[in-house]
Length: 314
Image (cartoon, rainbow, N blue to C red; front, top):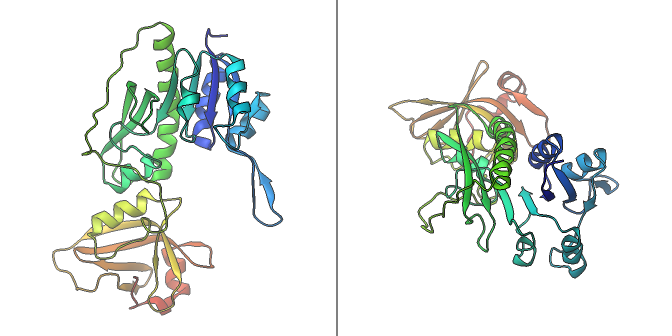
């Protein structure tokens, strides 16, 4: 076992790779804190978080607090007497928790801080059209994603990369960076970098119904970046003016043209080619889903939904 006693905190699949890296490298994970079980779907089936599923397989001690400020939960953490807490894709921690371990509480964040502070940094890196992003380890303090930086690792964003692809890259690179950071702390060789308090950096707010809807008056490049930045989940969406049905777009190509037909959002279906016009060209739709239907490619849509030809998306 490595010398650290660790409490790990995380919930989604992104966090599992980091937890697995700790276990595979013989770190002593004394407990795992994850979200409470949720009921969903038909019959209110109970769903476990990805981190809980992994922890059960590895026979790790699990803690699932409903409230992070519960006295019993806080006391349980103190009794474990861990050297360090590690947070990957978890809730905001109150000070009474992150100040417990003597070596501090480390967060792994999926951006090059101070850029893209917030809940959805991977999505927003692509939505904003960035050419590079990365992962950051830092010590948690009172302000969300403002703590002192320990290490960073940069990665390029490919021109046609979507969030699903980037997520997989950052998940792996993030777990390796976390191991590197722990080695530095263990050997007391780390140097911290204070983050700028400037408000001029890009933000990564939580995704919602409003900020995932396509505005057809924007440039083709902005819409293209939005679609790939929200693919495969939660997906960029729009509405058919004719049917009122929601359409989700998963894969598009932007073709720039000098002359616009002046009808932003107009659909043109010709053979198996689906175009949606924008002010500086058109988007070629490669994959989409109509409300109530399965996800389909352009030829399936062109053959089954010819009534959408010459209609508008709004």
